[in-house]
Length: 248
Image (cartoon, rainbow, N blue to C red; front, top):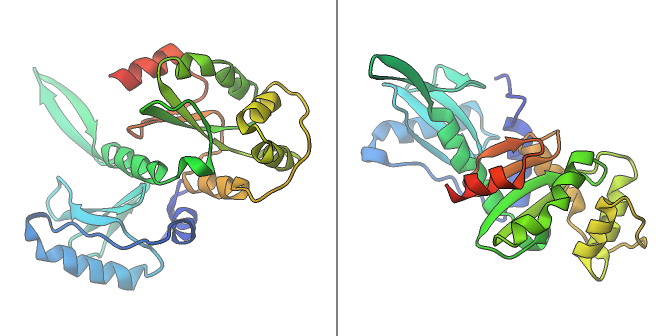
């Protein structure tokens, strides 16, 4: 089966190593016996993949299969698999048509579940609010620096910022590790964002894990922002816009 550029094989290989357990959970929606049949068939067809759930889609004889953030669709006989596209529901209201992206709704939940399972202890974290955003950042990216300069606007509003850090340059990883190992981690990381030098240090750290996590969710540009419901925002966006979306 051809693999989606966003996810499947890298995402699933990593998840098996990252999570302590990855039990398969299949929906028993309406006690549908075909779900168990599909479970068995999919294990035969793609045994390396670990599914999160299988459930009926809104389309007759089509089932939705989730891969902890990736979504595919399979026919009820498992003879056809739809991958890499979006299932759109056509809705008519007041003589006008519009589309509801069914796949994106499921992806939002998948992203949220995946990111929520990453402990604060593995991330650079600013603030301690109940609302939060997950941000893929880079210490050498100008727009990431601009985002970091906005940090007080988030923390004053009670919003926690959780950073996954992408090491884009050959010497970036060593500098990020030095910040992680500093006595004041956040201060050292902020100094890197300000293009200042910090003392070189080494210790046990999750920075390589960050690279795998970022690769697994298919992110290659920075900043990439995930709201706490899984909504994806690409590129720098003003705090006012992000805070308004969080509050809505």
